[in-house]
Length: 138
Image 1 (cartoon, rainbow, N blue to C red):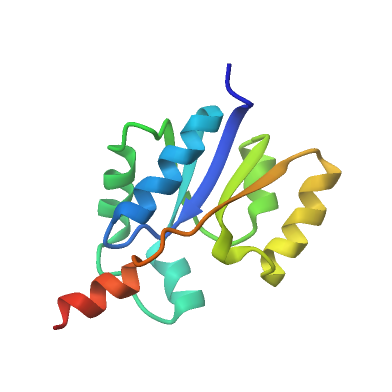
Image 2: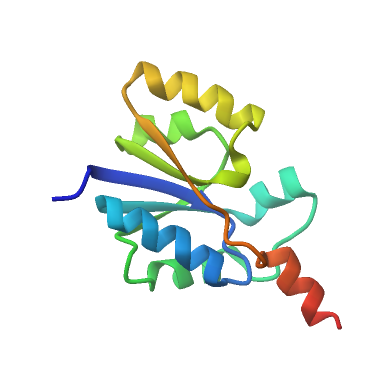
């Protein structure tokens, strides 16, 4: 039996790479049902000031095709607590590169009040969508 019933994680998942796969695999190892929020193009533009290389619909389809993923939902804002209000999960999985970030410090407090845990996974060293983009430009 797995530690958690319903898990949740989010991401842009642009230029899907092994780091993305690692977080989805590790999350599914700990929960029975994994929901993945894929950031919309509009949300990415809002906080990264650049459009993803792969359009939202295609990124959503790629993530849905991963065997570790049970459900894919659009992530239209960065309010993880609002997501929990619509999709009651008991754990959220996040890369440890977000640990200490103001957004997640606030989420930890809010989630603690409703007994939702945040599990931070080690960041996959040496790979990111930014690195993939830079290598492609060589």
